[in-house]
Amino acid sequence: MRKNEDGKDNKEEGLGSDEAVQGRGTEKKGGEGKEKKEEEENERKDDITVTSSISGELETKRQHGELDGRSKEENMKNSSVSSVCSSSNSSSIVSSSSSMNKKKRNRVVSSRSRVKGDQQEVTVSGIMQLKAVLCALSEHRPDIGYCQCLNYLAAVLLLVCEPDTAFWILAAMIDYVIPEGYFSDSLIGAVADTRVLQTLVSKKMPQIARHLKKLDTNLSAASLQWFVCLFVGVIPIHLTIRVWDLVIIHGSHVLFWVSLAVLHLQQERVLSAQNEGELYNVITTIGEGLEDENALMDAILKFRISKTTIKQLRQHERKSLSFRVSRETQQNTPKPRSTDHASSHRPEIPSDPQLPAPPPPIPS
Image (cartoon, rainbow, N blue to C red):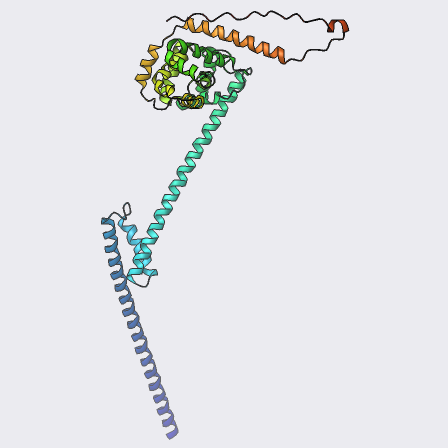
C-alpha cells in the first residue's frame, strides 16, 4: 500500500512539476512576445521620426527650387526607401537626394537620345526624298543626268513642298525657265551669262569696273555659282525664295537684275578688296549682311534691263564661246598621217573662220 501510495504520490509530484514547467514556458513566451511588440513599436516610431525629418528637409529643398516638378508622394517614397537603407538621418537624406539626382540625369539623357533619334530620322528621310527627286530628274532628262548644283535646287524645293511637287517644279524650271546649257558638260550657258554680267557691270557700275581692271581680274569665275545655283547659298534663304518667285514669273534674265542689285548693295566691300584673293572672298560671301527684303527689291528695280538686250548679249557670248571651244578642239585633235609623199610637202592653206560679231550696244 505504501508503494502504491508512494507511486501515486510520485505521479502527483510529476504532474505538478510538468505543470510548473509548462507555466514557466508560457510566461517566457509571453515575455518574448511583449518584447517583440515593444521593439516593433520603437522601430515604427523611429521610422516615423526619420520620415518626418526627411520630409521636412525635402520641403525646404522644394522651396529653394531644387526639386521642381517632383510630386510629394514620389519624394516621400524615395525618402522612405533611402531611410530604410541608411543607418542615420543624415545618411538617409544624402542617399535620397543622390537617387533623385540620378533619376533626373537619366531623364535628361533619355530625352536627349530621343531628340537625337528624331533628328536622325528626319535627316535620313530628307536624304531619301532628295535622292528620289534627283533620280527621277535624271530619268526625265537623261541628257543632263546629274549636275553638281541640282541638289541645291531640289533641297530648296523640298523645304516648301512634297517630293512629287518638288520634282515637277524643278523639271519645269529646267525645261522652260533656266537657259539651255546651264547643266551641260561644258556649262556653256552659265559661263556665257557670267561674261554678260561682266559687260553689264562695265556699263552700269563704272566704279566697280575700274576697280576690277586695276586688280586685273573679272567676275566670271567667282560669280559662276550665282547662276548655276540660282543664288542658293549665296544670299539668305528667305531672299532666295523671293528671287525664285521673280525668276519663275518673269524669266531667267532676272538673274542679272539680282546680280547687279547685290553688287550695288555690297559695293563698299567690293571696293575694299586689295588683291584678287580678297576680291574672290568678297564675291563668294557677297550675301553676308543682306537681310532686308525691301532693300533688295528696291535695288532690283534700279537695274531692270530689258529682256531683248540681255538676249542679244547672251547670243553674242554663246557664239564667242562656241567659236573658242571649236578652235581649241581642232588644235587638240591629232592630224591623220598622209600616205602621199608629194602632198605631205604641200603647205596647208589656213582656213578663214568667221569671227563673231562685236557685242550689241547696251542702252544707257
